Image (cartoon, rainbow, N blue to C red; front, side, top):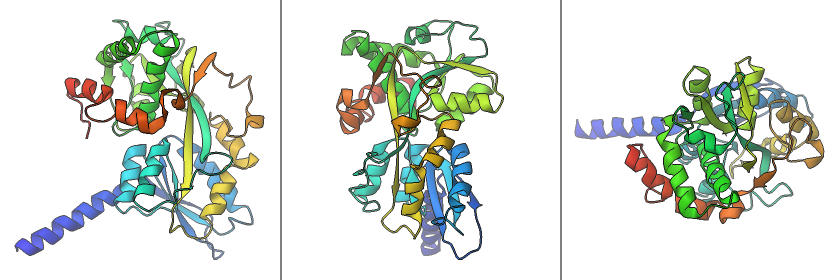
Length: 331
């Protein structure tokens, strides 16, 4: 009985690790093509729903079908490490791909191309209620007593990390010290009402009526508007450039590399743009629709993600301590 119980618990653990986010299957069927598994973070779902059929209509993608899984970037990365099948991974943060490199699941040179491994870009914006009734325009407005903020949990969501670094960097861009920037984060989190697991869940919470402002990808706000949600968004003068990676796994089936190449094509990049993303091809960015913020900075401003994760997102880091004091899980 003890051995049987142990085996059952082990099987359950494997099943849970492999669950990842929500899964579905789409694309062309038949024709002798491969069935590829795409494991992605939550927000580009609508874009891939159009990109995958477009790829299947190409010679390289003819007959290819896809199993898709979407969820919080960090959780998706851990799920792949735990056994979730993946031929292509598309995450919010480069470090979530690097974790797969460490586990020998993705080649170390995954980002050695002219796109530095990225497939889309965006910026951090502030989604507000239709008409912006509380006149929220800047990062300082998020600290007001009458403003309730929604942002995901940075220990599961890549989008949340982008949000936090945008808020921190904005303080530095304003000439404040790191001590003042840390104090800003403490006050900001005092106003955060809900920390969902993913950026998409945070958006659902916001459009469901909770909060006055959602810190989010610009493209998430645009997607919500396209779905008819009564929201507006503003982009602060100071914000961060978001860069989202894509990679094939070492054991990827035939067609995976071709699919990644297709995601950088003009056709696919225009689909991403239609869903609110900024293209990795500068020539395809409509500057009237996607103006460059006055003080746009990159994660390299703070030493890159390795340094940022250590300084901010370890349990004993700046954000880890803030969350611990709030009783929020950091593991």
